[in-house]
Image 1 (tube, rainbow, N blue to C red):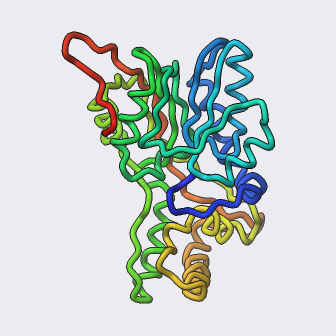
Image 2 (tube, rainbow, N blue to C red):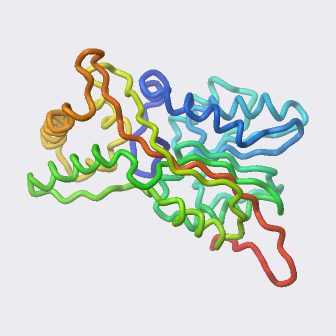
Length: 271
């Protein structure tokens, strides 16, 4: 998914066992259409693979900056791509002197609960006419998995909440418009996603992305819940013949352009 505020990230496991995150983001670059000489921010860049693709597209006359909150992810990105610029920062508060031509984000925005602050920050970073191209989890994303975790926790007297921002198309498009963007494209779609790891795929996925669901659980409680979730979801999400778990992903992809301010119309800046 992305790089959350309370999730503990293992960059090696992320690349080795969850490489589909970057793989699925590759065709999102077609929506970005980066061109030589552009200045582009990769928001929630993770281990930097898509940042590097953008860097190749903008060339030596352009600039790409990768931003993430995870120090471990950024350390891996800097080792892999020492010639690129990476910065550790909060997407809700980041500021820079020179505006960007585009902001790109793959599988990261849904980790930010205060989405308005993030979108306002992006608007403040873009030049007028600059574009915001992103994909995030949409309404109903991994609902079978999260519902099962929440219900199994509740059965043990433990209250947990969905930690992610998974909006409807209308909800997010409205927010973008309120923050100074014109939405050019928005689509919510199902994307069932095979999880790496064979029979351990679901527990590996929960181990990588589900920390935020398990913050109040002991190690023993977490193990018990994961085993119960596997048992509950096996008929629906596990193919015994291929030993593959398939997560019920739903994605929201959009392209928005920062409006050119006219008269007294201004783009809001984060406080």
